[in-house]
Image (cartoon, rainbow, N blue to C red):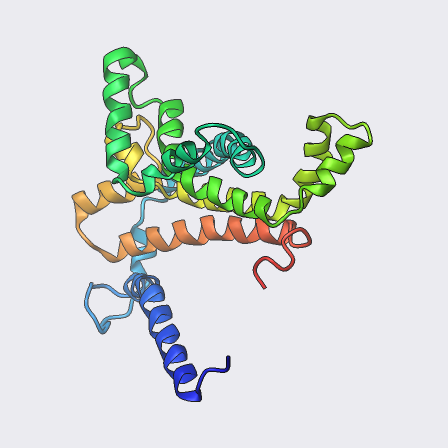
Length: 265
């Protein structure tokens, strides 16, 4: 059914408004970073904010965030890939219940699970409070529904007949999965990995509540907000954080652009 021209115009205007709302925070940070005050519209343009940032401490925290993103992504893929496969390709009692339970974190606030992990650690493993492995586990929990759903969607669009044919021809189930199914769902797995990395590297809640001994960049910026307030220096830090993390995600896309062809176009 062809929609009237008026409806197309309305939808296009709505899309432009939505895009403007989504991109406005980044534009505001960009404008604030090149002024000497925090007002709109900008009045006094200056690049002094770039000189006042404590770059050694910032880049150390940025390195912690990148490590957090890397290890959380490995953990998430190792957990969510087999989980998504079982939910999509196997039939067993309790499958619907398990599928619903996995997506419960999207219903309740993330702070609920982070505090629960914090209480458990405080009771049984107080010496691990604030350590990097605990932060990785707590951070990864929040992204489980996103990663499982992404991989499960890729599995739903790949025909299981190829895997079944490989098994009939003598391959073991593990060989069939890694040699046949995994290459077919590679775009979905890579997309899930980029989601997991971006979510984890920019995560604030888990490191802050659990008292990370070596804070990632989101906590570092928040502490500067508490100490300095909203200043152009903070806008510079936010922009550099976004540039580095999104740049790495974009680099990952170019590395695997052949596998991802058709996913983002």
